[in-house]
Length: 348
Length: 292
Image (cartoon, each protein chain N blue to C red):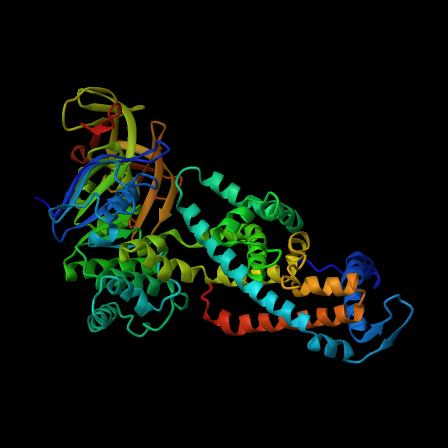
């Protein structure tokens, strides 16, 4: 039995919207799982159901062997970090962190030592007497983390906690969250719409779309072996190139161009996916195209081009000399091609 | 912002004139008039007046009926503020939690706000009339209620009549205050605290303090000034003069008793009282409030 088990979880709102559809998932003790998907896909709803902030329409959630469907949020032993921090604006940092402990009848001395320990760990021990309005975004984020840590919960729930921070701070906090999670070894679920966050943070990633789990796996599995067209497009930056084509005897036709695949399949309406960094530019390349636009990123560059009327991008070292308007030749390794059936949107 | 330069130095006065005229006629002139009245004694038939110094003030301070009105106004505004505030808050919290038909509750609870005080008074009349008053007979059966003779019963009458409409005002502002509280703050507290009541007093209520403070001032002002129409259509000060507010007394003394000097002095006293209350509130209460 896993530490956290979701069994056929469904959420239907009173207005009939199905936010989460028959989702099942097992999370092991100490694991860091990331829910990722576009906004409105139901990932936050799923998290909120685990927290108890949202009723469960159907299915069962168990945490540490106990079914928590009907247990009060305060008694589930979960701690949540919210996107907008959700600090109590009228309380000092100390009281913000102590509030949950006070309500659980923990002794004053114990509260003091717990809060002080957490504050030291998060380097906010200088701020304990301040009110949230006197803190910067990053500091508020730390207080929100501190509020979760002091409780020593069974599970941490993060609801897009980094979205309100600027890019630099976001990267820094991302690292800290990961470090903290390792250090404390607490099972964590992290919700984000940002695939980079998902890839870097998660032991496992759950890709959700339209209330349905598209794929669960380690970042590497998800990246190198996407099960559906949605996952293929959503994970990876720049996006995977998808070409609509018909496949006959293992040869995909994209307009005039013919791409050899490594198995001899026939699909009328298919898509082949190639990651921008799996396209190699060589003078001996089989394909030729014109660079419409070139983005210089320092060590890398991205070339935007089109073939058979379909746009694509390739990412390569900026040492190669291709300018906008130039023609270039390239090759594609058959083994790096992902084939999807357009009728099912699933991998073939 | 673009700066507009007037060519003639008079045109700005032309644009200001309508507003200034209204202020002058309906605000400044009456104020000056009040001060003049307060320091003069006028013949009841308007044949003459003379400067009286502080005589009018001396008179009201030695007048026991002024103390009665003062006492009543203080009690009345305290009770009205307490009752309308707490019932308004209770209703707002309940209506905020309603899932189905929220708007029906809201609309019905807001309606009384649109009714003029005098109309409220007339309606209250029906409930408290000796002949066919529903509440009159209910209370009369319970403890021999008779506001025509008993001061305390008369208080009950004007408090109910005066609170009813004002509960709506409190309800609206508290509801708006509740909805202005970040949803996630409440959610965070749901995870942190099991007891609804404790959560309300430790999170929701402190965050409503700015609204509460505002409503205390509004309610006191209402009880002081806007209940005129209610008193005038309900007890008219009955049993004796025990349910006259300061405003009502100033009106009766000035326009019914034709003692404009006393009415003017009373008005100035009222101004000072409101000033003191407001200073007190801002000095001692506002400092304890957290504004977002």
